Length: 298
Image (cartoon, rainbow, N blue to C red; front, side):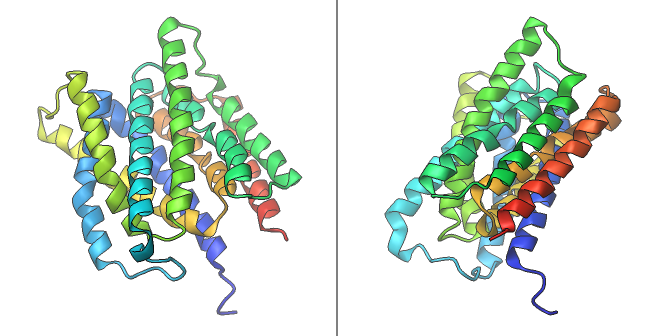
């Protein structure tokens, strides 16, 4: 009875909790006083002290190889993951200013399709038929969830296309994360990739001439909330879960994000939410648990 709660169960719950935290991130981005890329820059910059302290104080996770024998490859992977995450953040935050929260979050989270295909070839992950069915369910549910907010206007189309570009970089980040978690702890991954992400986002924000300093304490509060919930808690829980689950199942589980984002936008931003979207949310949950059950079967 003591060992009934297996690591993969804890990993699955961590992924769902992390997805829920990140589902709130679009709300903070919308409320930010800064531009989209500058907001993403502060998300990483303000998270750094928390992440560095976490790395110093956290115990070494069981089953991770130290990076003593992988110093050069590990830094390459940290830099790559940081770059991919920065580009994902830049494009996603930009999309949030040109389309609905539900659309931007949905389209960015088609990443599981890319991750599943890549994981099959890069990590030789077996993809059961029932898993594909579960992934299909989550995608259909996500489409229903955002269906009420689809808009054919030029501005929304631009935002939707930018969100799809973000999905490609998000998939690349998740694959890099899976590789890093083979020999680095959660704290090490986040603390060592965040500086690369912050640097890239800072340069992009400077190039776009976005204001870099909020005008009020309320603006700073929004950025701190984004850094802590979105980066420290959200990405921390997701990075932990990636150690114990396949990349494909982890990415599919992250499709909980559009549901959380849509509910938060409905409550806080007064975005519409109708019966079809609620049905989509139920289908997303069903698809996630179907994918999980098929992936845990021998």
